[in-house]
Amino acid sequence: MDFAKVRELIDRSNNIVIIVHTRPDGDAIGSGLALKKALEKNGKNVTLISPDPIPVFLEWLPGAEEILVFSENKADAKAKLEEADMIFIVDFNTFSRAGTLLGEILEDYLSQKPVVMIDHHLQPDKRIPYIFSDPSKASSAELVYEFITNTGLVEQLDPDIATAIYTGILTDTGSFRFDKTSGRTHRIVAELIEAGAKNADIYSKIFDTYTYDKLQLLGEAIRRMVVIPRCGVSYIILDEDTLRKFNFKQGDTEGVVNYGLMLDGVKFTALFTEKPGEDKIRISFRSKGDFDVNRFARKYFNGGGHKNAAGGNFEGSMAQAEKTFLSKVKKHCDEIKNS
Ligand SMILES: [Mn+2]
Image (spheres, rainbow, N blue to C red):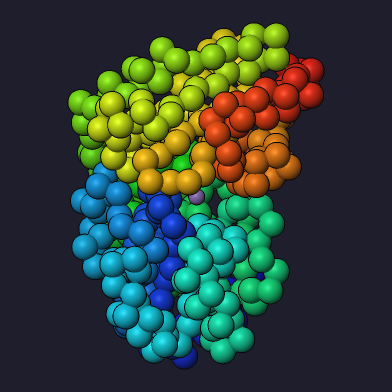
């Protein structure tokens, strides 16, 4: 990315809109808030738009209350986009990840306003003129750090920016344990803590937030885990009745998929959920080592993501979804086992 060129575009802009992806996670919200604050320090009018409401575990973040939720306030969001001199899209690689309607609006503005992408997902939409994308990074928040320092938007990190970036890195690295967590990641994190990110406090605010139902649902999910030791595979099915039984709320299955990889010898795991009110079965995939779940999700389950973490969906019954999954596992059994 030509940082000088993008800095010039920022300097010429008064109104800037930042957009994150649907069902935003800690990385999306943390990245969005950090970038917003950095631009505001330079006198810009910045609106951060989230397609969906902010998850409760992120509501405490400084500035979270200023986020404009598209699904709740379409008119305001459209007006801000109309006014915008430039648009940032953060933590996603293609317009459709902002939701159908917001994606179409972005599509229209692509030829009218400068659009900048800051992201770490594979295969960024090449039509976007300014792309700062690096799939080798564990989080978009790490790229936001590089962006705001390389463009000179921020010379001295403040506690709010440090807290927002720390949240993105912490959540997308699985608390610093995933493969892509690098020496660079840790050096950035050291700076964030020195700049005022209260690491123990942030961890607790994000992770020690289970409701009783959510913790009971996790117990049920673990009890139901199916293991195929021959292939190094495990999976969990949570159907609609089970989710209802535990009074499912959005976010209650967050993190459940990771438990499948805790088993010794398991290299690939999946979580199937049939959420009340949704017509599709959602599937989350996680792997360790070389087995590429992005490819698996793209090829068989109409999805994608990263090499070790991806998502997809299935139209049909849960039994059909499981059957399809098992046949694909069988096909890739040796590949998974030896990955
Ligand atoms: Mn991310």
